[in-house]
Image (cartoon, rainbow over all chains, first blue to last red; front, side, top):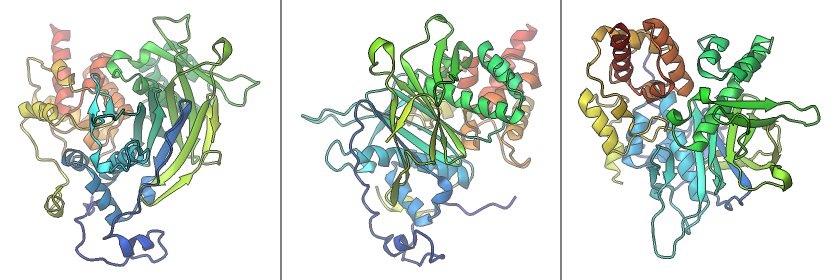
Length: 327
Length: 135
């Protein structure tokens, strides 16, 4: 097993041309000793909106760019990134920290916000939050965020006010253990039944991954840590109604089975045909008679400080569960 | 931030810390900002167990971990190795615990499962459960 060179190099002393002139980053190579292009500012999401930002690690190949990202992080976060074993893990860890810092900085709630200047803390249960500076007259915005990453996708969800949890997973992720054995051990009886009823093993495996991401997203939205909501204490119910284009998703906790917990709304997306993204949001308002408004989603693919692409409403982002309107 | 701090050799492996200190280090630095925040800073308190696991147990845990994460057999996995740093996400961690339950014929509580961060944590927990079982 040959040891690969580190993806994250020492910053080069002088400019060197990018090996592949056709690379979309070739214009970057001429300027990389200068500052990166400024982050495009974005309006804060409205109370009813959710913003989803994601990075595809395989599309970020520029070593100088990754170096620049590393420079955005405080020493403790750099150490954390470097603590991961191997280039690929380090890269996705780096991109996750970069994505959260640059994304929040875009909302420019306090003039031009340098991603480097953001401080993070954890709530009493361990959920990461922004620690805004307390300055005179500065009211920190109630920006909520959550991140998830695999080696092939890094995603960040942002809302105003609503607690949010997101989880991403490759569609083709396989468990080492048998799915039903795993579900019997860790999921609820209803969920086991739901999986058991699927005859096709490929579909069953995909359904398992969908359930897993939805459950993760819920626990992350709650923000109280996994131990307060073990997976076998709540059921994710996926209802496929013939009349609706996509299924309704709801969570039911074991301690109050009669009441479907109405506080939480879910969305399940298929991203780029390769990943599932589950989003769980605290419900802010309901329409009449407890009916929920659909989730208003804006999705952007990004390479921070290089390019952004609005992808909501394209076939890069397909709603496969929950009530979602894409903008 | 001084440029010098980034211009020197960047090690790929963290310096190993003695086991007793690793917990303190995590607390002092405000805990690594891993997205498996479900292992809160308070988690180590749960795992203050009376005995330290035998090396054979650590070996067996390492074997289960390497299998789950499809790591080459020669990968160095020690008690200090963190699951997350080896590439385990939350699904891997739960699968590892399931593998350990089978290997050692024990049952791990869901909330304990999530507080396991290192190979040593797992080994210590296993020995505690085995000891209770045989008591």
